[in-house]
Amino acid sequence: MTDDVSRNERIKEASNYLRGTLEQGLREEITGAIVEDDQQLVKFHGLYLQDDRDLRPERTRKKMEKAFAFMIRVRISGGVLTPAQWLALDQIARDYGNGTMKLTTRQTVQLHGVIKSNLKAMMQRIDAVLLNTIAACGDVNRNVMCNPNPHQSRAHGEALELAHKISDHLLPRTPAYREIWLDGERIAGGEDEVVEPIYGKTYLPRKFKVVLAVPPSNDVDIFAHDLGYIAILDEAGSVTGWNVTVGGGMGMTHGEPDTYPRTADVMGHCETRDAVAIAEAVVTVQRDWGDRLNRKHARLKYTIEDRGLDAFRAEVERRAGVLLAPAKPFQFTSTGDRYGWSAGADGRSHLTLYVQNGRLFEKQMSALRRIAQGHDGDFRITPNQHLIIANIPVEKQKEIHWLAVENGLLAPWSGLRRNSMACVALPTCGLALAESERYLPDLVTALDARLAAHGLSADDIVIRMTGCPNGCARPYLAEIGLVGKGPGRYNLYLGAAFDGSRLSKLYAEDIEHDAIIAALDPLFAAYAASRQKGERFGDFTIRAGFVAATGNGRDFHANVGKQRV
Ligand code: SRM
Ligand code: SF4
Image (cartoon, rainbow, N blue to C red):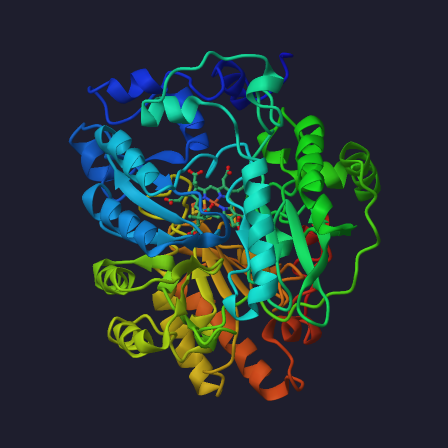
């Protein structure tokens, strides 16, 4: 390895395929933490060391160690769980975690607040229900997302099957996970290509995310991810092939214009039989071409901006031994969930529940426990942090419906709240600059009052908030995006497309609660007064001249403030 690589590259290289000193660190009783290098490695095992930031000031005053605990992210490709798996995660959250569950923007479950001494027992309980957390985080392919849309069951079934295949194919092969957490026999490290045939010793330069979408729903926000597959359907609703997208991503850093969110490019079209080979080729090109010096420039989106889409496509085709055909036409209509009941072809039904910002507290968890105990269908986590109870037989529908009603799990009337999404942020996220999940519900209440005054209560308007610019709730693809700048302060972004195909643009900087409402109220008034038939709020803010439209890549930071206000 040369000198000019980032610190994380050295940690990976020296880790003996993600082992590091994790086993010793777990035994160390003097601290609730683990050493710094292992903090990076443990992410590849699906765990993050965090501390409760609400308790930081008091503990610092008392000269105590931070309130360390781990966040656990489960790998659930396509977001589908059996009722038994759901019940196990619920029990683990109550036995070892903070008693809540967080449904994430990538169709998984996160549990927070697990102390070090409980980690191993928890991982073994997860394993016992045939789940694991490997590669839920780290510089590898993460959880593969897939449209959880059971009412289009045939295409959805094909998409889910491919999601599982890609997920399995791109899984790290190191035995470290089994050794450390499941007391598996230690297997000696070997040659790179034997231990990790796809990744090698240093894995990828950065995280990597794959999604599959079944139009017309773009609930997975396909343009936000490194690699995507858009199902092309025949008239009978079967998949005939896939358009392949590359180079999407959300993360950026305030004040650093060389970092930016980017919507993915459509690279071409492939047959289902070639989709896994294409995925492997995209991953290995990024492995070899991605930036290993600067982690802020290491995602695939920058590789594609720097090398160009044509060169990237040619290399992928060469490695996969597949020539991509020109992309086929497709159309998305929205990124939201389809709440409420939908009917399956076999007489069974599906109920999409609303979970505010994906956070489940005891009240909702106990209702879902009751559902899981008597349910033989499955639980499907949506990419918008909600939950589908799928395949419900007729005789169970009434009971499940009332459990949902009584426990606040049906979608609210407000068009803004139905389309709201917030990342975790405080108190667990170490990178949060501002509140998100704990604040957005109140902001929506305040904005709802203004929308009601303009007769817009029922209008679907997508609002998303994050506590920092990393973009975990994909805020730059929301018609109203709020991104934490500092305590109580946010940047306001406008002008993204309702179907998830266009990024937003900065409209107002560093503003607090009252200023957010003051900034949006006149826009709501103008929208109510002069929108065209069917015009979405994001499109309106551009047509009316409030913000310029964002093209792609570096264009995100261009023409800011040139709008007519
Ligand atoms: Fe994220 C880091 C939470 C989806 C971009 N994200 C984090 C960490 C782990 C903070 C950290 O590194 O210490 C957050 C943990 C908070 C906590 O206390 O739980 C965190 N990200 C989340 C979740 C839970 C948000 C949510 O409320 O649902 C989502 C979990 C997804 C999952 O289940 O796998 C989550 N993160 C995303 C997404 C959305 C997506 O993938 O669809 C993005 C934007 C898309 C992208 O990757 O470009 C995203 N998270 C980031 C980034 C910025 C990456 C970048 O390229 O710059 C970071 C920071 C980093 O990697 O350095 C980050
Ligand atoms: Fe944390 Fe920032 Fe992600 Fe929110 S967007 S969870 S604050 S890293």
